[in-house]
Amino acid sequence: MTQLLLGIAPQWEPTLENFVIGRNLELHSALRHALSSTGGERGFYVWGEAVSGKSHLLQAAVERARVNGQSAVYQCGAVPEEAQVVAVDDVEKLDDAAQISLFALYNRIRESGGMLIVSGQAAPAHLQLRDDLRTRLGWGLVYQVHALNDEEKSQTLQQHAKARGFELPIEVTQYLLRHGRRDLPYLLSVLDELDAHCLRLKKRAATVPLLKDVMQK
Image 1 (cartoon, rainbow, N blue to C red):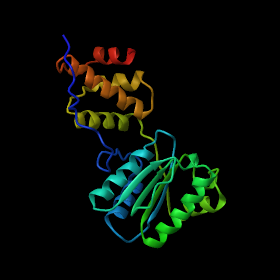
Image 2: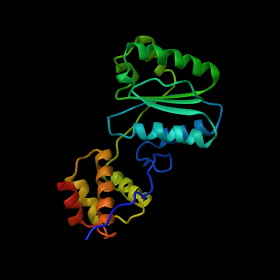
Image 3: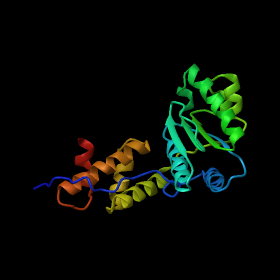
Image 4: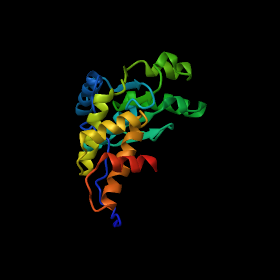
């Protein structure tokens, strides 16, 4: 017998605390320092492959800024309104008009002492953007975001399960990493489905057979 879900599982939100650092210690430390002070570097450009964790960091930075009482906004593939902390994800998706807007926003934030964090899939010199914008993005701190290896992904999955309030046996994690797709968003979405499946079965513990059922669906 199954039961209806009440939708009471805790919502997982990206934060600097639940970001699995891996080989990104210097970047993580620099962001934390910049968000906790008014001095220092106020411009960041981070780049890496699509599933490296760039979006997590940008959203986490905005979350931290809001906790600190600052106005902050995150936008993916578009240019938002000005705030004390602005995060623009996937800069390569901006059309010509949006690139002009981001160039102007960059200058305003620099003059006001705000903070701008931009991400892309390539280093600034290799972006297919306006020359003036590409130059500006390279003026601040530039970091490559390194994707997680399997051990770090396993740690992330364990953290995600803990945040949702269920135990994830190591054999379930290992099976998912061996037989699932490699990108972290997919792996996390499978965990969410597994958690929901266990709840429908009256909170049965997560097992490899239940994981197989979820993955087959």
